[in-house]
Length: 79
Image (cartoon, rainbow, N blue to C red):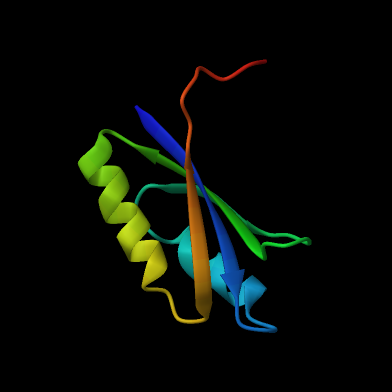
């Protein structure tokens, strides 16, 4: 399993719509609009690097997104 977080900046007033659109993409397990320097945070679960890449590309194509930053998870989850 390959996991990543995608931090998204959106056009003004588009965070909720972008989060909703992104939530429907294959591989996205969670998408939430947030406050701070990024407008939406997305959690991605993929079977392999190729699937992760496909999900990232699909997210980047969502209208209203101005910038993304992908952070790959490198360790096991800590409880």
